Length: 127
Image (cartoon, rainbow, N blue to C red):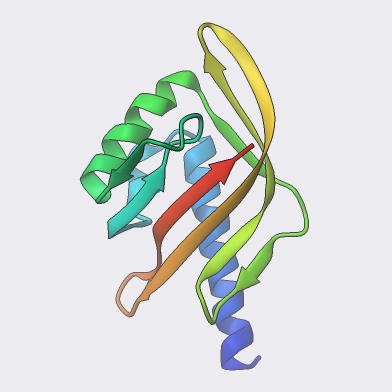
């Protein structure tokens, strides 16, 4: 396997691992995939965002109380040259005591750390 194909496979695996930790609401495991300077746009209010791993972890800790689920649809676009993983997914969570399901476009930008592998540097999803 070429180096670029291996990098793409590793990036997709990291995205899948992060998605599994997210859907299991495992905040400690999920946050291990965060770059120190991660930037997270809020799902339901794009005027709000979180900067930095600690802020992102607090945000997702609060969101996990609403039992969100993120289910990517195929195809998933993976570009190891830029670290971008994007596509369309089903987003589910609870808002005002009502379960909602919406289709979102997502874009995750990963940065490669030689010691930790691919880390999420930016995440964005919008309906």
